[in-house]
Length: 392
Image (cartoon, rainbow, N blue to C red; front, side, top):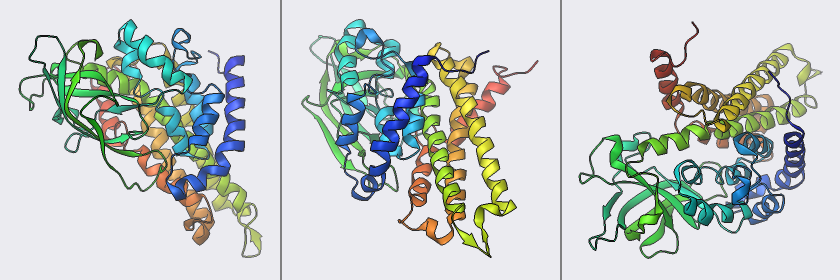
């Protein structure tokens, strides 16, 4: 058992830490205030080769894997979860292509993401189908000319990066009955932004993680070539495999946010005087700092193990409890840490003069996206009940 990073991963961590401190940190507040897409940060990531961390070398990436992306996101999320989301979006939509895509699909769609020439989005959620994936109503029907193409109609919502994306991985019902709940009734498609019938609908007014637009993807009689079906028709399992493999990447956003919030609050507590003492000298304050520091390290161990497992292809059903634990624990920790950071600053922590209120707002997103905390608890419990997670 070796807990040390390889030299390459240590160098990656150092590079990302420097970029986070020099480029991301100074921009964090302005990105949140304006809500404008931080193209300058995207270009920094592109020039540093961070957009292809998860993408294999043969498709233009660096092959650092999920662990490499996890490390990068942890560093960036210390200062901006918007910037961390930009890195996450190099893996979430490309995941289905890498897991089940054809060689032609990989050659066509992955290199542009790695180089920064293109961006992509992930279309799964719908107004009535968030956690309940099978409730989706977007429908794909075979084209009536016998070509093997498909025609898609529907609306996807809450899609991060929807405005900036050049193509999307979209899940749709391919059964004749759109209310069908069989797992083989859903399939996955690559849909290009430039195609006729593809448009962006309304964008959301978000509480946090502002700067990367989230909103609707509208599909109206969109003709999708047969070559753009990802994997087999009947792709619910592909959706789950894609999300399972993402758990440590989302967890990394939580770890980084918790670290950033605690460091910020600790520095403030070491300077703030109250009752004739420095705030950090109070034992009650020290205990809260100690508890959060311990939880951060526990979350990191869960997350790094989950990333290591995902890179080994261990994101099928029997491994889900371990992956879900990382996502659940790290994102709930982000909420606790950001809340305590606000508390340690007192009234000042509630004001926009400090980043604590930004950490607090951003943290809430993490327990919802890509499987809520309640969904993760259900998956962990199912793992125990099914003896996938057992200690005897």
